Length: 255
Image 1 (tube, helix red, strand yellow):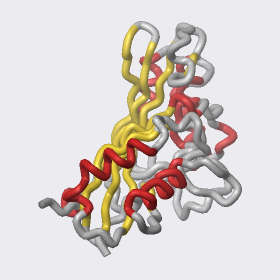
Image 2 (tube, rainbow, N blue to C red):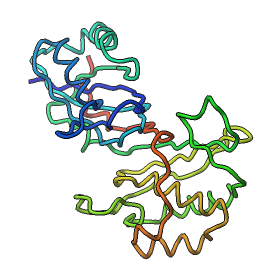
Image 3 (cartoon, rainbow, N blue to C red):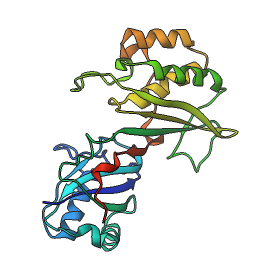
């Protein structure tokens, strides 16, 4: 049976995260599965590239699904149009691509990137998309600490406790704060994998450095101690965005 990748974006504010859960209705995965099944006239189950928590957004998200329709990619524009027409406005389908039968949206991802937005002046237009942080921030010190993350292997200090992951090792290849304007900043981070709540806890800890409540040396000790309670608080979900997923070109079938 042919396998397809579906590329999409969503505003996570109204949803209980990506993944279908028995005790949690109204998830992004659930809605897409329902609407895709209607459009294709067959039961469809989709597998996402990863879980996003309640309220977290995705600018670039991938999922895979199998369909009895062998030429779905040739009818892509029509299928994308129909899906977008019946999906809520918070979810937008970008593309449907034919991939190899063994391609996996979760396990074949080479790297993932996230962005976390903050603003330092009260702004009613950013309330639901960025985190308001009052007071001065030492962005230079925050970036010095961010660069140190590129040398870290074990991210236990920034992981939610009691998860089912086999390892807390991650390879971070980018971590930096970028100034957008006088009072808006974005934290950009890329890694081969992320732990549950990892980005939000890293941002919360870096903000402690920015407020000069933690030094770079103390930050290094927090990481070495591998104790989540030593790190800063997790910042709110509404300012976090999954911004990019990279896959090897070999899994895509062109033509």
